[in-house]
Every structure is written in structure tokens, then in C-alpha cells.
Image 1 (cartoon, rainbow, N blue to C red):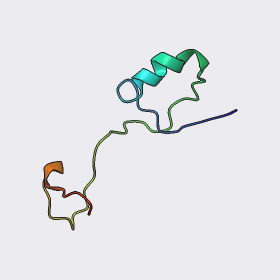
Image 2: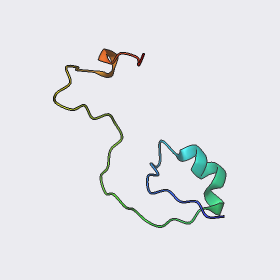
Image 3: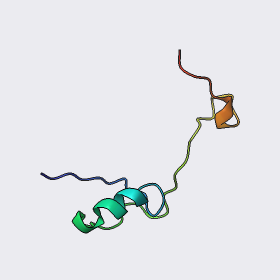
Image 4: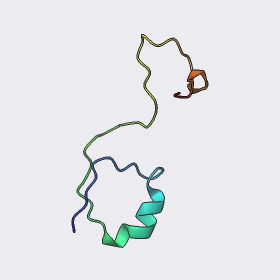
Length: 57
């Protein structure tokens, strides 16, 4: 079986998976330099922080 991902975030987000499965992984290299993890809010939304979001009904 083959599984792949182009969105691995190391060392933080996927560190546990790397520790668990690292010896079974093939590093195919970097696909995005300088990418950051976070939220992007469109300018048309009237919020300033994640706390301003309301739960879906």
C-alpha cells in the first residue's frame, strides 16, 4: 500500500507521527519553503481573532 502527503509540518504538528513511523517513511523533500501554519481570514469578515468566530448551527 502507498500513502502520501504533501502537507507534513515538521517538527511541530507531525512530530509524533515522525517518531512513530519515521523508519518506514521516505522523505521526498520540501514542496513549500517558508509555509506557515495558521488561519487566514478574508477581508470581508468582521472579526479580529479566532475568539470572534461563532459555532456552526
